[in-house]
Image (tube, rainbow, N blue to C red; front, side, top):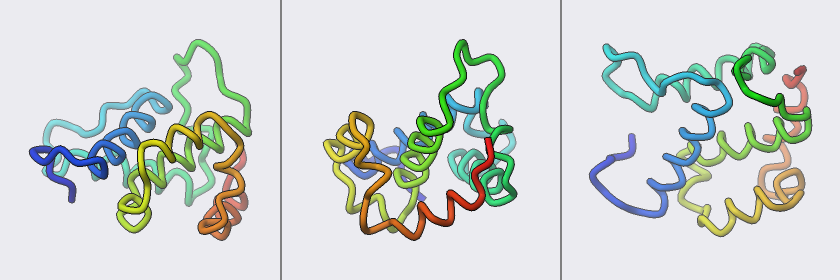
Length: 123
């Protein structure tokens, strides 16, 4: 797991993924009794996606619900940010570019991940 005492770009990207998950879901990253704080929200998020409960991820208190395509993009970005295999390859400028463009939907290295995500995505 990532150490919060080390300030690295990989840690910043991982934490940004956690922040996205918090904003989308309206949940805190961990219950007070949990020993690995970030693992709780990441595991919960992944389990909701794998069980096809994408619409349950979105906080009903959000002022405006994102469109399906925007929701897909931001969820996928959050998952990539916390993916321990993908994260070290990401740079913050890549994350920003993915947020600003449609590049996220066509990211070649992870086309298979997107296909799998598409199969489970039913907002």
